[in-house]
Image (cartoon, rainbow, N blue to C red; front, side, top):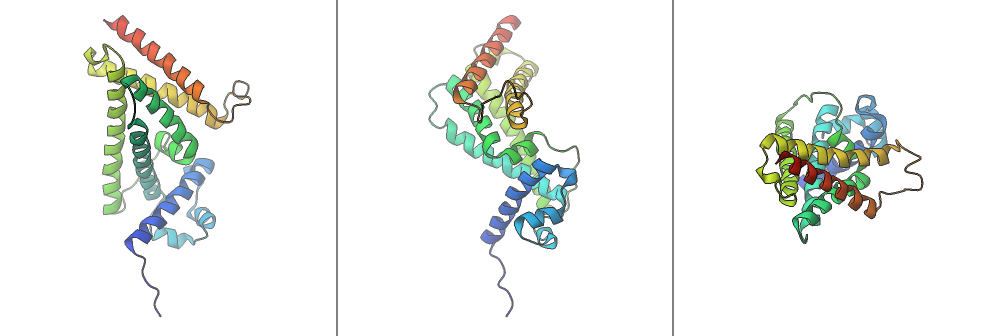
Length: 220
């Protein structure tokens, strides 16, 4: 008797399972060292079965990054729902980014430190995912810039270029804290720190906000 084909829901669930596992493996061993055979062994599947869902490693990376930004947007929107002020929203954005990096380390690394390749678009599904990824990445950057502009007096009056630079400074400073924690790059300073504590996130964000305020004042 022929095997019953998977429903669209079952296919979507299987694709997510592959992406979840692949994100961790890619982050551990590196994109260029990951083989579909190794990934298949992690999942208890055959390599040829994975190719039924993703035609190449490049396609898999593309869909992982798209899914990662969808997850980050969802979690961030939930975190901001009951914020009490623009400054509170900015603190929540920083905290949520750090929490996401902790809970989905593989996704975070591939989203914000993707390997230096240009994914080849194998089919229409990959082309759509690439457009969605570009849109999500642009929207997330604009969202971060909007929250920062709302929280810092006088920033809205600065030029587009200056707002972009300040937003880049703010995000990369948080990213640097995440990287030090994830890679244990400064073990002496991180001794005894299993997770980035809440008070450290708040203090780090407060310092950044004060630095941005000073920059805006200096520009006036």
